[in-house]
Image 1 (cartoon, rainbow, N blue to C red):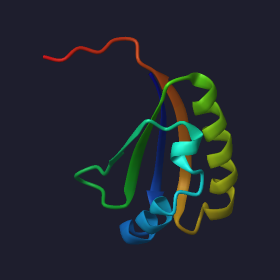
Image 2 (cartoon, rainbow, N blue to C red):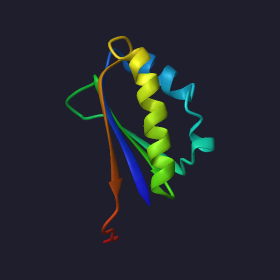
Image 3 (cartoon, rainbow, N blue to C red):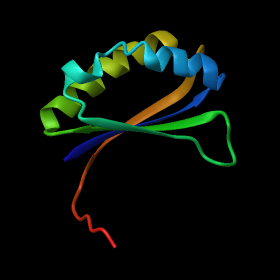
Length: 94
């Protein structure tokens, strides 16, 4: 599994959630198998999103598409978006 992690500040959760739910990259068609949204317990204006893919190429394509979108909304809905692709090297349930 490959995870595309996205992190950024937000202007408001409701505004960000509306934009996220509109799904501008068509997550399912892009190959996203599952996603998780995190909000730190000490910062209501920061979001972390993990998008899980079966392969690296899907994650890379989605990253490129998201960076195009971020160029249009950075400074309005989101602030300072950062992305990184993570590969699982070990996983164990305890």
